[in-house]
Amino acid sequence: MSTTVARVRAFNRFYTRVIGVLHAKLVGSSYSLVEARLMFELAGRDHEGAELRRLLDLDAGYLSRILGKLESAGLVRRTQSPSDARRQVIGLTAEGRTAFDDLERRQIASVEELVAPLSPSQCDELTSAMTAIESALGTRPAPHTVVLRSPEPGDLGWVISRNGALYAREQGWGISYEALVATIVAEYASRPSDPREAGWIAEVDGRRVGAIFCMKDDDRTARLRLLLVDPAARGMGIGERLVGECLRFAGRSGYERITLWTVSTQHAARRIYERAGFTLDDESPFDGFGMPLTAQNWSRHLPG
Image (cartoon, rainbow, N blue to C red):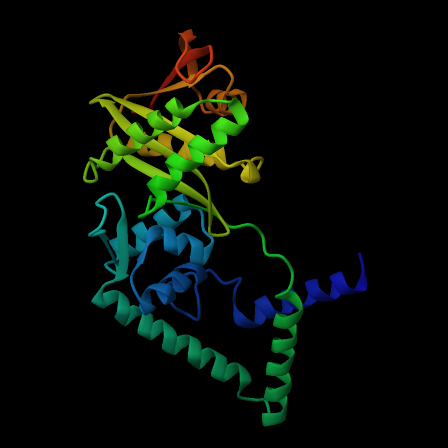
């Protein structure tokens, strides 16, 4: 281990002890560091869930659990987006804003107490050192941020065009496939208020790289549709995350079973489906995209 690595690790241990990051609660409050950061973001303005995931770089399930806790405490409210009933807008309640104001006062007082013994010149040295650290480490490439969010205006057109272009190039499929995608997307868009249907767009560092939809077959059966992962983002586990999100939504929505349709040449997608618990129900010849293919129906039961 180099001297630099050892020194950085020692500084991290020192600083986390000084500011109390290792404590279960922040500055003597009843909130964790993550809860406090979430309240800080909401104090500025309301956010949709996807925005919060991007800002905090949190897994969707973890964020949902934190929001549920704060909502139960009466600090956070979740309402439907006026533009899409399947999306939520999250904000602080009046009680939440009061709690945040108290937390903000506590944090300011804590920092004031920390720097009170320092002289003006020592304060200048401290802030200069912090600036130097930010400058040195801020230039390094940040880890990729992967976010799954609800479709927004413009996304559905992207799903159609990206599917058409990608599968024409990789599989040689004709315009009939893009027409099928357009039909499915139009069907999804025609039911914006259906609580048992949902779609997700995958982003990496703010760039669209994937999509999936959960749509209704009948009252007991959901259908997974249009799984897409851009070649530039393959190998990052995005396909698994999209399928997992679709399965969790289908289970929460009361479906007993979920199905999907694919073709045998989709080897990478089939491996994802198998790992997610899908099994092959049947297959048959298919000649719909300008070449002979083998169509397959897959399904799995959902936990009750």
